[in-house]
Image (cartoon, rainbow, N blue to C red; front, side, top):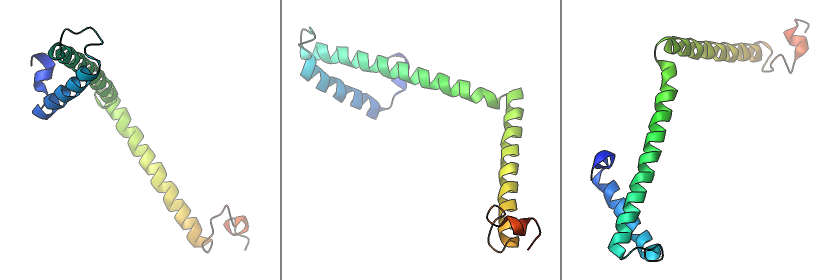
Length: 118
Protein backbone atom coordinates (compact mmCIF):
# COMPACT_ATOMS: atom_id res chain seq x y z
CA UNK A 1 0.00 0.00 0.00
CA UNK A 2 1.81 3.04 -1.26
CA UNK A 3 0.95 6.70 -1.50
CA UNK A 4 -2.33 8.11 -0.26
CA UNK A 5 -3.90 4.70 0.27
CA UNK A 6 -1.36 3.88 2.99
CA UNK A 7 -3.16 6.43 5.21
CA UNK A 8 -6.39 4.38 5.12
CA UNK A 9 -7.38 2.38 8.15
CA UNK A 10 -7.06 -1.39 8.19
CA UNK A 11 -10.85 -1.60 8.10
CA UNK A 12 -10.95 0.52 4.94
CA UNK A 13 -8.33 -1.68 3.25
CA UNK A 14 -10.28 -4.77 4.25
CA UNK A 15 -13.52 -3.30 2.87
CA UNK A 16 -11.86 -2.39 -0.44
CA UNK A 17 -10.48 -5.93 -0.66
CA UNK A 18 -13.89 -7.48 -0.02
CA UNK A 19 -15.62 -5.26 -2.56
CA UNK A 20 -12.91 -5.91 -5.15
CA UNK A 21 -13.17 -9.65 -4.61
CA UNK A 22 -16.96 -9.64 -5.08
CA UNK A 23 -16.69 -7.56 -8.26
CA UNK A 24 -13.90 -9.81 -9.54
CA UNK A 25 -15.93 -12.94 -8.90
CA UNK A 26 -18.93 -11.54 -10.78
CA UNK A 27 -17.26 -9.78 -13.70
CA UNK A 28 -13.54 -10.58 -13.62
CA UNK A 29 -13.20 -13.13 -16.38
CA UNK A 30 -15.82 -11.40 -18.53
CA UNK A 31 -13.71 -8.24 -18.51
CA UNK A 32 -10.68 -10.08 -19.84
CA UNK A 33 -8.73 -10.89 -16.69
CA UNK A 34 -6.52 -13.99 -16.86
CA UNK A 35 -7.54 -15.13 -13.39
CA UNK A 36 -9.66 -14.12 -10.42
CA UNK A 37 -6.62 -12.82 -8.46
CA UNK A 38 -5.69 -10.64 -11.45
CA UNK A 39 -9.28 -9.38 -11.66
CA UNK A 40 -9.29 -8.64 -7.92
CA UNK A 41 -6.03 -6.68 -8.20
CA UNK A 42 -7.44 -4.67 -11.11
CA UNK A 43 -10.63 -3.93 -9.18
CA UNK A 44 -8.65 -2.85 -6.10
CA UNK A 45 -6.62 -0.42 -8.25
CA UNK A 46 -9.85 0.97 -9.71
CA UNK A 47 -11.48 1.33 -6.29
CA UNK A 48 -8.44 3.03 -4.75
CA UNK A 49 -8.22 5.40 -7.74
CA UNK A 50 -11.91 6.28 -7.38
CA UNK A 51 -11.58 6.80 -3.62
CA UNK A 52 -8.50 8.95 -4.16
CA UNK A 53 -10.27 11.17 -6.69
CA UNK A 54 -13.30 11.56 -4.41
CA UNK A 55 -11.10 12.33 -1.40
CA UNK A 56 -9.05 14.95 -3.25
CA UNK A 57 -12.17 16.55 -4.69
CA UNK A 58 -13.84 16.78 -1.27
CA UNK A 59 -10.66 18.12 0.35
CA UNK A 60 -10.41 20.84 -2.29
CA UNK A 61 -14.07 21.76 -1.76
CA UNK A 62 -13.52 22.06 1.99
CA UNK A 63 -10.39 24.17 1.55
CA UNK A 64 -12.12 26.51 -0.88
CA UNK A 65 -15.16 26.79 1.37
CA UNK A 66 -12.90 27.60 4.32
CA UNK A 67 -11.17 30.51 2.57
CA UNK A 68 -13.99 32.82 3.60
CA UNK A 69 -12.83 32.37 7.21
CA UNK A 70 -9.23 33.40 6.49
CA UNK A 71 -7.85 36.93 6.25
CA UNK A 72 -10.20 39.71 5.24
CA UNK A 73 -12.91 37.17 4.45
CA UNK A 74 -12.99 35.96 8.05
CA UNK A 75 -13.80 39.41 9.37
CA UNK A 76 -16.57 39.82 6.81
CA UNK A 77 -17.99 36.39 7.64
CA UNK A 78 -17.98 37.21 11.35
CA UNK A 79 -19.72 40.53 10.79
CA UNK A 80 -22.37 38.90 8.58
CA UNK A 81 -22.93 36.10 11.10
CA UNK A 82 -23.26 38.57 13.99
CA UNK A 83 -25.59 40.84 12.01
CA UNK A 84 -27.79 37.88 11.13
CA UNK A 85 -27.97 36.86 14.79
CA UNK A 86 -28.81 40.42 15.90
CA UNK A 87 -31.57 40.77 13.26
CA UNK A 88 -33.11 37.42 14.16
CA UNK A 89 -32.86 38.07 17.90
CA UNK A 90 -34.39 41.56 17.53
CA UNK A 91 -37.20 40.22 15.31
CA UNK A 92 -37.98 37.46 17.82
CA UNK A 93 -38.06 39.94 20.72
CA UNK A 94 -40.23 42.37 18.73
CA UNK A 95 -42.71 39.58 17.86
CA UNK A 96 -42.86 38.45 21.51
CA UNK A 97 -43.45 42.04 22.66
CA UNK A 98 -46.20 42.56 20.10
CA UNK A 99 -47.93 39.36 21.14
CA UNK A 100 -47.72 40.41 24.80
CA UNK A 101 -49.00 43.96 24.27
CA UNK A 102 -51.77 42.87 21.88
CA UNK A 103 -53.16 40.36 24.34
CA UNK A 104 -51.63 37.36 22.63
CA UNK A 105 -52.22 38.60 19.08
CA UNK A 106 -49.47 40.08 16.96
CA UNK A 107 -50.00 43.36 15.14
CA UNK A 108 -50.66 41.55 11.87
CA UNK A 109 -53.74 39.94 13.47
CA UNK A 110 -54.89 42.96 15.48
CA UNK A 111 -53.95 46.12 13.50
CA UNK A 112 -56.25 48.34 15.52
CA UNK A 113 -54.47 47.37 18.74
CA UNK A 114 -51.04 47.95 17.23
CA UNK A 115 -52.10 51.41 15.97
CA UNK A 116 -53.21 52.43 19.44
CA UNK A 117 -56.94 52.47 18.77
CA UNK A 118 -58.41 50.04 20.99
